[in-house]
Length: 91
Image (cartoon, rainbow, N blue to C red; front, side, top):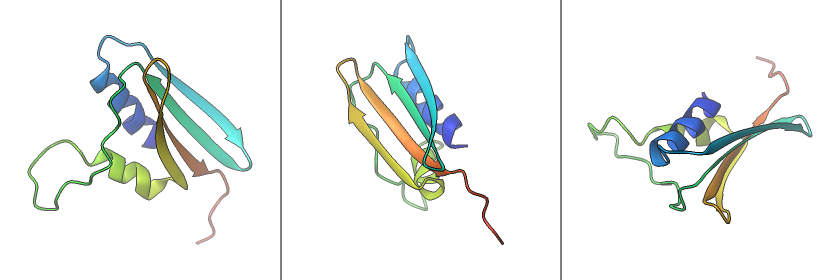
């Protein structure tokens, strides 16, 4: 779900590409990073609960599922990233 949301955002905001997906396992966490050439920062706002808009909820899902989440500018655009725990949860 997290990979899908980050890649979808990159594709929507940089339709002519390129976009890159990077995956790294580090300290029992999966680091997901998606780089694109759009310099605009990703929206951090969560839409209102009564909003009928079909878009804008994906990053809220990413934040809910990820251990950590962020975005930083690069020379060519930006990279959005998230960290997910790779440890099994007891429950």
